[in-house]
Length: 63
Image (cartoon, rainbow, N blue to C red; front, top):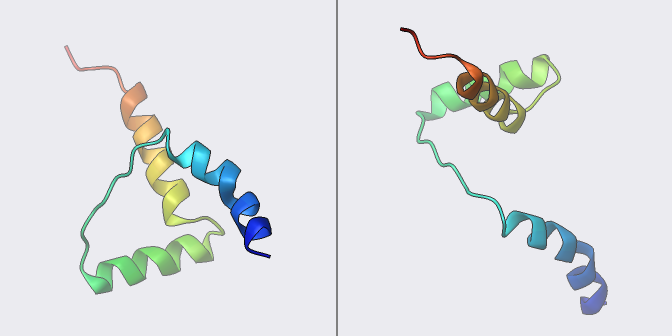
């Protein structure tokens, strides 16, 4: 049984080992509001952050 659990997550662990983690501290109220709104829009905080980062990186610098 333990081997099944280990195998179940091995691909995920391998992928995550090549990624960087971003941590942001928010007030509990702000976090709950963000989580609730994301859920209402059928998305996640994870998806919102990744979308924001992609959009920010594609912005051209103002000259």
